[in-house]
Length: 441
Ligand SMILES: O=c1ccn([C@@H]2O[C@H](COP(=O)(O)OP(=O)(O)O[C@H]3O[C@H](CO)[C@@H](O)[C@H](O)[C@H]3O)[C@@H](O)[C@H]2O)c(=O)[nH]1
Image (spheres, helix red, strand yellow):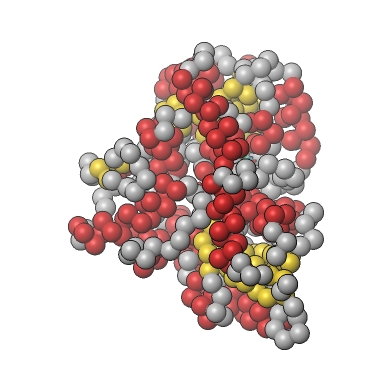
C-alpha cells in the first residue's frame, strides 16, 4: 500500500489553527492510509507567536510535521490592515504564493523516485484560495477546509450569482433581503461580512452548476491538549480553581475570541452591566497593549471580587465544559459557537467582525439557538452598547430555564451523533479521504 502525505496550509491565527490542526489530527487517527501530514506555516505581523502555538498543538503527533515558510518578502503595507483587514489578509496570502511554490517543489520532489510516500493533495484555508493555482502546477488537487459554517458557504455561492443577476455590488446598508441556499429565513444585508467583495472574486469561478463537491466533516472541535497562545499555564489554573468554587450554572462567561478588542468606553459599559446584573462572571479581555485589567473602571475589581474574575486568554473549552458556567456572551466566532453548543451552554450574541454577524443571525433568527444581544454590531463603527442593554441580555440568558437553553441541549446531542459511525460527519470524512487518496489504496 502506497502511503500518503497531505500538505495543509492553515491560516495562522488561533481560530483557524486550532480547528485545522484538529482536523489533521483526526485524519491521522482515523485513516491508516495517511503516513504524514505536513503543516506549511507562515506568519502575519499580528500573529508573531503563531508558530510556537502551532508547534505546541502538534507536539504529541509524530506523524504531523511542521514546515515553516520563510518571511514574506513584500508584504502589503500595514495601513491596509487598519483600513480593510480582509483586503490586507488576501494581499498577504497572495504574497505567500512563491514561498509555497518553493516549499512544494522541495517536498514533492523529495517524495519522488524510490520513496514510497506520495503527496496526495493540499488542504488550504479559505483565505488561501490563490494557492490552488500552485497546487495545479504540481498536479496536486486542492481542498478548502472551511473553518466557518455551511451558511457562510451558501453566502460565498450566493453573492457572485447575485452580482451576475443584478450587476451591482451589495450595499450593506440597503434594506435588500437575500435568499441564501440553506437558509429558511431571508437574510438582511446588514449581517453580511464587510470584507466579502474581494474574497468572493476568488469564489466566482465556482459559482456555476459545477460547484465543487462539499464534504460535511463538522463539527470539528479541538477539545484536548490546548495550550494558550501566550503559553502561560498558571493563569489557566487560577481560572479553573475559581470556577470550582462557584455554584452550578451561576457564571456568565464573556469572551470575544482571539482578537476581539474593545475600547475603554465599551469595557466600562460591560463592567457597569455586570455590576448591575449581579450575576457571577468570568470575563476574558483582549487589549491591544497591556493587561486585561488595564481598561477597567476604578474600583471595579475590588467591588466585584466576590462575584467575578477578569482574565486574559481563558481555557475556553474547559470553561464551557464546567458545570458552574450557565451562559456565554460571545462574538460568535464559529469555533466559540460550536464549543458552546457542544457543552450545551447558551450564547448571547455580540458579533464584532468577519462573518460573525451572519453567525449571530443564524443562531438567533434562523435556528433559535441563542439570545440576541446584537446581530449587526460592527466593531469598526465604534458604537457603544449601553450597560442597560447588556445587562438585559445577560438577564434573559441566565435567568430561568429559557427555551433557548433546551434547544441548545438538544443540539449538543445532535453534534455528538453527527460524529458517530455512519452519520454525516463520519461519512463526509470518508468520502473526502476516498476522493483524495483513492479507494484502491
Ligand atoms: O480566551 C480565549 C479566546 C479564544 N479561545 C479559543 O480560540 C478559538 C477562537 O475561535 P473563534 O471563536 O472562532 O473566534 P476567532 O478567533 O475570532 O476566529 C476567527 O476564525 C473563525 C473561524 O473561521 C471565524 O468564525 C471568526 O469570525 C474569526 O474571527 C476558540 O477555539 C476558543 O476556544 C480560547 O481558548 N480562549
